[in-house]
Amino acid sequence: MTREYPDEPADEFPRPPRTVTDREGRDVEIVAADAADRESILEMYVAFDPADRAQGIPPSREEAIEDWLDTILSEDTLNVAAVHEDSVAGHATLVPDSHGEYELAIFVLQSFQGAGIGTELVETLLGLAQSEGLENVWLTVERWNDPAVALYRKVGFETTEAESFEIEMSIRL
Image (cartoon, rainbow, N blue to C red; front, side, top):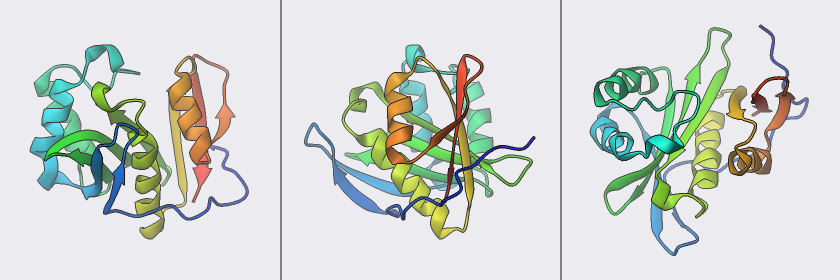
């Protein structure tokens, strides 16, 4: 499969760690995450509202979440977490595909949605990716998820495929 990517690379993105203040006035630290952060990330996904799951992820049962975390926290992935008062409020990951490109996924706890944390997570994850030399990132999003589509466009993703119920978007770093 050949994906399309923008001709021009994106501007530089911020790198972790960094502290941001969300629209609710909460200080949130955006940090690189890995398997050592598994328990705190697991707690976030166990607390995640099933109504906010999209495209089958994150899984809803704790055992399935643990299996999924084995994949997204492996050595060849990149991850960032949004931490507020020692709890993970959001998580974003880049998982390599079989073409040497990376698929992005992001999840923010409901109580932090709409406060700018998603944008900060995506931008910081893309900054981490730039520092690691990654070039091509893509994602799919349900076409009716207007807040997510707006976030991705805001940070520089372009629509590459929109013929199904999902929109595929990509960015060149």
